[in-house]
Length: 174
Image (cartoon, rainbow, N blue to C red; front, side):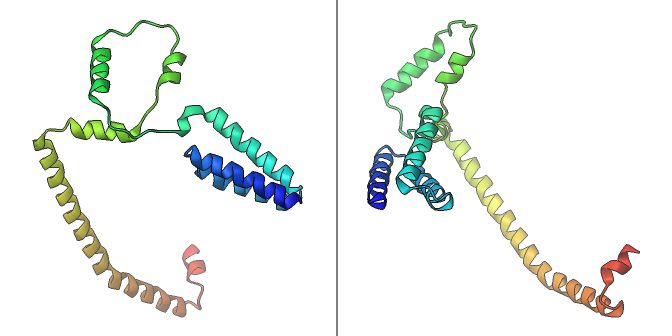
């Protein structure tokens, strides 16, 4: 009966997390449940409850930082941003309010940066990428040509070990 209730509770919680786009926390929930349930030998319902409490604590502590929306801004959003940039910011003595309100959306940031590039900059980035690829090809060719030399060096070291009775490291330390 304990296993059935624990399984049902675990399943409901996993479905809830997946619906909230926090499915990766379901893996942690299962891991916590298994470690507590079988490692500590606690009843499974208690282990699942403790796992759910831990995950809930993580979500509450981290707040909205767990969710990032990668959406393209609409024209009205861009106009609002332009107006906000033109208006002076009100002075406040507390920096904590700015820190709490700030949120970095990496996808949107990259998208905005790419959209602000002019065609010449895009062409230059393409040329730089081609040059980097050529450099990497040359590096791989150089490394592949070094392979036989490294093998010869290893054979040379093995031959020296035979000369010194197999204790080359001790001889070199002296």
